[in-house]
Length: 111
Image 1: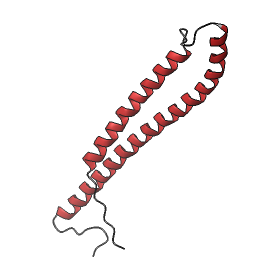
Image 2 (image 1 turned 180 degrees about the horizontal axis):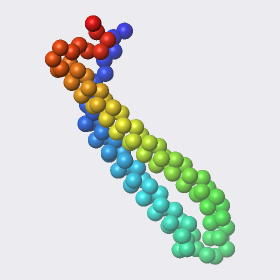
Image 3 (image 1 turned 90 degrees about the vertical axis):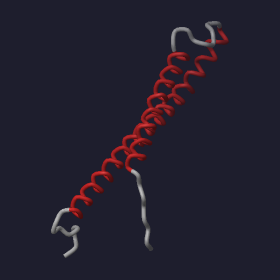
Image 4 (image 1 turned 135 degrees about the vertical axis):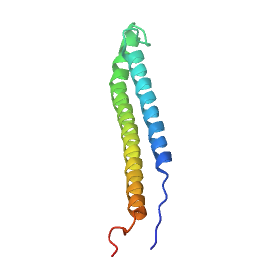
């Protein structure tokens, strides 16, 4: 089977940068959500029913915020991976092009 892959390192690096921005915005939004619902000015009030609701809600909220934090981390990891992959491909392309254009050289692995 003959498989070819074409990749534009600049486009992949730009996508990595975009994902990094998304991860940063997500982190800010999660922090704002956490501050809003867990802060001193809680949104459910301080009466008996509000306090009972808050107790149950905050247990679920902790799990939800943990999951959101995991998603933020995954987006950040994907951004880094894309950027590193783009750099590796660009470096490999540059090295191969230099070897091919050097007078009297043959590509690695060829006689």
